[in-house]
Image 1 (tube, rainbow over the protein chains, first blue to last red):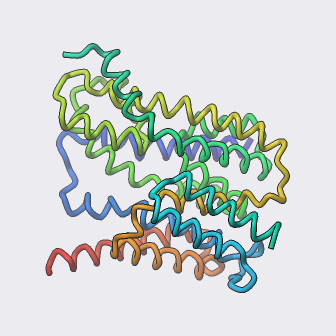
Image 2 (cartoon, chains in turn orange, red; image 1 turned 90 degrees about the vertical axis):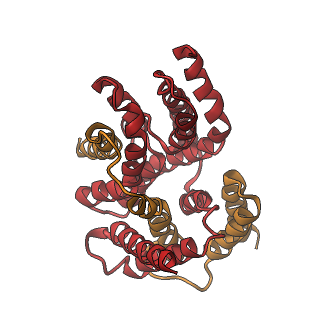
Length: 104
Length: 230
């Protein structure tokens, strides 16, 4: 049951971040500066998901040597920069990872 | 003036090419949620109630790491803070609408629909232009729910050994592909990533997503400030 409380709470907070500005603002409240900084939110937050998932092992310790995820992520990043394609990025990373853990 | 249906369909057409990446994202979410131990019903419930890819994956990631509900909800809030910007931008176009429409629009205000409808709103002044955003949002909704559903079915069949957890950082990495060519963005990425990784075990309550995100935003604030002055 508590799992549903969690899901609904996350749903409410997601809805509220979308709804609050639409509901409260009559005219634009954010100046250009605030908008500029807010536009960096994905850039600032997504690495906090990406980096630990690559560099930490299952126990939460930093693992640099013998870590196929680092090389696979680098390959995905290079493919991503070259193609600017989301699907190509995800699948090149997964394919390299599987190659490294199952074949090499 | 175009009819409501015409504007709605225009929204569907405009957003469609951007729906291709949503499919693997939804599949991965469904598969992982089942892997972590959520029931198919709860997994579907997350997609229906939250309807936000990044939020749902962050929820899974922190839940499987044993974070408390309070931290999970605030991290989801931090991830979603970009929607404040979307809402602020959209608000001037929908300020005259009834509350019920504002609620409906808020539910469908996702990244892709926002980006495309914002362009459309700039060019069109028709009173029914908001149907464009609803068209885009509904399209994404259908794709997201069906790919989640497919992911749930696959999740029951796919062995854990495949290491699909790794698809999480890859998906978020893919969302940043346009950032790697900009110096400020790269600096923000590295600092936020380092704070999260090094702080993972030290920042209490698994609040590393919030702490790293705020640090990154602070760095972006300083760097964009500097550049303005030069």
